[in-house]
Image (tube, rainbow, N blue to C red; front, side, top):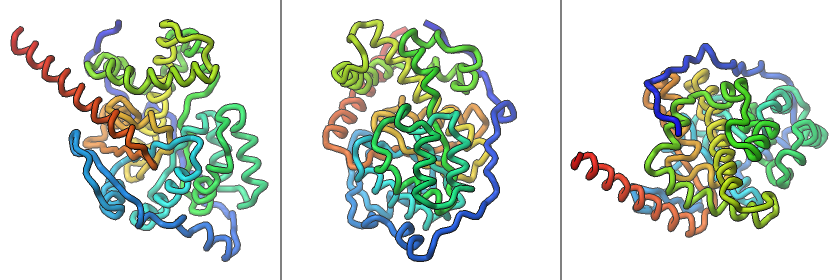
Length: 341
């Protein structure tokens, strides 16, 4: 395995620029605008819980929103098949727009791959607000081929961003690269892909060497792999296939974190709200922790992120509690070994 290197720094000057296009002229009649701006049932009756260490505490929607609004980024973990999760995200966006102003927000989407950023920009800044524009975004982003989950479920979020001119970012690595990693491992990436998809190469390697990483793999990635095998996405569950699956998943998270961090490094006053699958926000190896690490290497001091599970089951809590406890055990063993050395 590779070892940690010594403090490589990445400068924002070397990164691609995200220039927000000038506000354009898409219009909507007053009645439709009022309907679009209304929060879906609001979030006032929503139950909110937060972790303090390994304790699960009840919070309030207002307190949670104020906490989120002070972060650089928040990642909302969804179930891809759940329309309720998208409606809740739209309500959260409405409330964050009220607290911070829509112009201070950006929305990152796991569902759209990086090369399709121009169609997202067209949809937000230049497209007429219409079902034809919705269909054009669906077609030109190759949604059906590259994502596949029900597009209509995501439209409340997409349309709200269009109406309020909230920049949307395609976070995900392109399928052409991730498919090669699924088949041949991380070494299948080209030099250009590695540089573009992995901003903080030292930190990416270091994350996989953390003592807690095997626990994360067993608790989060292995069940996901088993589900993919059951669905027929992978022909077998052998060790080599699983190893490449892990490589692909951590590349996926690192690439999404890299895209988010690039944008935030260039727009430090923005709050990026990411909509991603629930597994991508779990533990200290998910996207939020990776964003904090990358931003630190890009020179942004005290970068802060938050993770939110949308409409979670109690299974999420039980798994997270186990992960926390196991991490503490590993840390205690590591400290004991250092003391005895």
